[in-house]
Length: 350
Image (cartoon, rainbow, N blue to C red):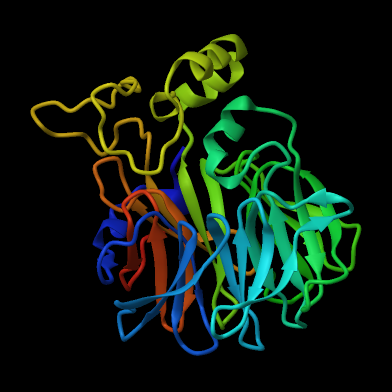
């Protein structure tokens, strides 16, 4: 249900696209040099200019690149599918790697963040699939197998801080520096883990969407992206295991009954009950296959503001949102663009 701070609006559709399209952008990070780095496919782009519209290839890596983070010493940290976590010098050369922890390969690195003291936290999404098979991981509905991993600034001394996480796509250190917040997409929750070890607490346990990456500004404020909204039909299919497994076996994955990032109507896709155009118009309140949603959180992790791109909107499949100075940037992986969120406020609590 979308209510309170999550009440629907169309604020995200008022976002401004910055520069030309970027093919399937996944994450963004502001470098110590003032450039914005964007992961796209096997490459990382270095974007400069007032609107970050001057772009050059910073690095080409061994696999698809996902989560990014900037280290205080000028290195760029990058999650590379099938490889693990790599640290890149200011000229784009790999200077360190984290490929395994406790004898298990980090094959599905999703997100990375740097604590104020230089410690690094990384999420490994699944032991069963790599990042590009996120929908398969969701629909198989297996026991959670994701991990929260900690290491030092040189990527040494790695240890598992939490296990059995349900696709932990977002990670950030709390503003007071005492906790690590992890967004679990398939469990629809935000969990805080004590950096001192042992204790954990659930901040929010039943989001109406699939939470994605977390971004923190210089003032400590945190933003959360959402891959898509949950729907009654998808939740039903996930429970009906025989039907779901037959669908996965016999139907192309882009036509499965489940969330997608792009949401452009395909005449062969499932109708999703009311998601049909009438008189050339698709109603914004129709059941969504794809959706655009970001939320601003307070110091306690509660949403205080949201911006939406509804079913008929154009900014869908948000995988990352980050405050950059006084601006807030996001990448729409579903629509191949980098956008700046509109100023002002969207739906608010209270």
